[in-house]
Image (cartoon, rainbow, N blue to C red):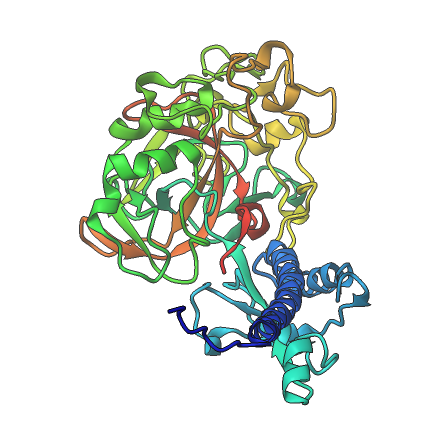
Length: 489
């Protein structure tokens, strides 16, 4: 007997095919909608990133910096278009806000007007494209093709973006010393007021000091190691003071924090120079012991040591590498500190003068947080007889080919030495940015200290286990302490 045939199922394949087509069309429609939304998100994110980066680069702790940040963000936004590079992006300053820290809660972000009124600690910029919706409702909304067809309504997808940019590190060496005096003062040198000299936090430009032998309040030297990983205002960690942790930061001359102001810093008494002096000497193309690497800590482009016994631009020659130490009362002074006319001073006691920086007339100083880009006007070598008395040295053989020239800046001759060919140098690596503290610092091996400013100190010779000889070159403006701006989102 032949088996019974199954009943025919005419049209079943067509029905299944139709269902599959609908499913495929639905998936394709959803993919198209998501692609449109994703593309808009990418367009807006590029806008937010560019505007935030442009704004953050201008922040320097001043109201002018905030104004420039606002302008930079608007200029960056003006170069962007959306909807596949067709429509111009509208811009409003309402999309830009500022804060002192990237992790600040929403309430901590302030608008440009508020930022300009209190700009000192603001280091981060945030851009949120949602704030631009009032100018163009289509910017953050993408019309949905599939959802509209499926529901019959004008459905849209949201696609906004935000970005936060700022600095993660600051080019300040994890070394702090006490400020020796007020922020700016006038030193009345011999002669008319035209010879009054600018003194900053007690330091004279062009004079070298042993940074390990200073204290404005006692005869015992005070110097400090900064926790390089803990931002101001936060408690430090004891492990962060170990040589293994601190060493690379000393090599690089930088710390992982956006600023050294805005709150007390965590410091440890007695900078361990004996353990870290070789790290500092990487600036002289010395990588003994592999404490530093040329890639992370390149040498200076001029590694010439200006040893006091061998310099040729002072007559008579100096008898000491730095301004000679001098104890008066309860203060550890140097021979550069006493008031003019002190008969106990002699020219050789000043140490080598003006290796990197020249003295500045007080009249050239202006009460501004940012020093002019070209620097202040300086004294000439003919003024040495009025600046360094009694027994003033004469500037014999001092570079004078160009205005403002110094031995370091000659670029050749007896006062210049390039690093090895294997280690390309970097200009001004020998300049250490050193935090100047409000002293006395509270008692204890570790303490919290307030930074008044950051001094620039030029290493005249390599450091030793007991001395760090460096010439004062002025106060570092906030803008000069700007590390690379990075996105924080």
